[in-house]
Length: 269
Image (tube, rainbow, N blue to C red; front, side, top):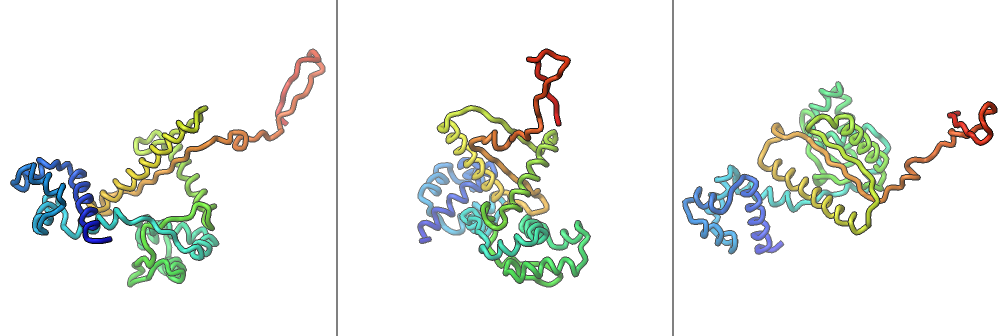
């Protein structure tokens, strides 16, 4: 990325950070004791002194280094684990679960406490991931990831069965807790044109982008102690109803001798 592109992305990130904090050009100008026109010109030309950038950042409670980190984070995309690592983890469901906990920002110490793991058991989990070059074990069983975060898993890769199970469990959890205002679940099937579905798929795609964007902002402006782990799952496509609702052939028709010949009774066998 050249200097011009870097500056462009930096100002885009700054504008988004200001928007998230409720700052308009007019409000920012008032805070800096300059006119709204000056602020508009600054963002239009994307040209100002470093001291001014630092001053703008301080208005919304962040440092310039925070802004740069936010820019890099918003540009970063989830990376796949090497396929060989996925193959090894797929052999051990508990190791997969342990990895999911770690990448969900749960510390090794918290995992050990919740699952009542001994120091030796905790170290064994960590050591298996270290041997796969996923992480590095530090003092007191702290860790440093050796792979880029966030991690992306292949839906049709070695971990496919584990991923399906995890998402099915989460959907079941959402249905069971649908009366809780923090949860929502909806399902439906309708006869529709493919072109109409294409419109909805675009909206779902935008929803995922909004989810990622808001998460990035929250993680930049708030500490982990102020955040809670959330998950989004959605599915939309042709409904293979006959495949998903097969008949078991246990329902057979029989005739009752006490009834007219043309009266058919049914019973489960």
